[in-house]
Amino acid sequence: MKIHIRYFASLREATGRGDEILELPTGASVSDVRAMLVTRYAGLRAILERCLCAVNRAYVQPEAALHEGDELVFIPPMGGGNAERGAE
Image (cartoon, rainbow, N blue to C red; front, side):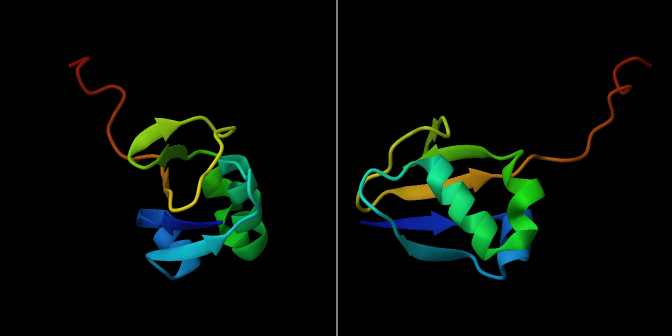
């Protein structure tokens, strides 16, 4: 089966691309894709461990099964902010 994966922010920088089509075995999960991407793009390991996952614009758990034509997005953690801000 084929799925569409989109890369944003630090994932885009690590892969050098904005998206790609992946060919996966039937029954593959989001976790399977994560493992595949870490093998393909070594720089993603630390980032993917902290990302949320969305399939077809809905948040999913890493165990979620993927289907033909799904769009998968890993949402990188957002930085910034100040934990002490509001305590002034």
